[in-house]
Image (cartoon, rainbow, N blue to C red; front, side, top):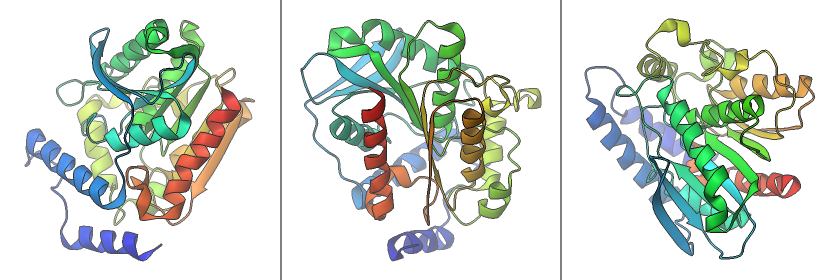
Length: 307
């Protein structure tokens, strides 16, 4: 682990973020999370210029569309931000989406799904599907190719991406090319070896994960519902190719690996990569380590093989 990441972990230990419990209001937690995200972007990312940014409605769901070209037939990345279904926004992942747009010469559609606890399961998943369906039907008006759509997301957004790929397969109403799952949260048990090993001291904690789960799925019967915990689906065959990225010191490491194994066992094409000495959230701060920036290059190389 390089000195920059070690310094951040030490700072986080000495100056802990607001505790995720009911003693702090959701408004304060979200404001704090956005401030931390902004600081991380300033220190360890670069806001790349893109040709066009539009804030529009996708069948009632706010989305932000990034485009760096006016040519027709562009690939499309539908992106779902992370944050435990309760935090972050289009703004927190703005630099992420700009970079994906520029590096992949693709249109990126970032989805502003509704969040918990105001909106519990299955609202985020319904919003994610509604936005994806709108993109499939309308992206041609914006120079995109509906036959070249990739779903992508980090953490809870990786969950949404995996669930959207599964729903697209089942319903056969939206055609996808691929799914990119960045340290996805796919197992509602929250008891894996990596959760126990990495669940404290690496930004995302087990305690926070349980708090997020309680907010989005307050009914324990939903925790392992395949519609929100896709590791428990019965049939993974026929899913579109997947690139699953994990981090060595992430509580969600085992989630991503287990899901990759499930897909591979079902005959799905899977690229899996564990990024050594990195932690949850590295995708938002790619300048913190060469491997974090390599993740964007690896995604670019994967997408080139599927569109």
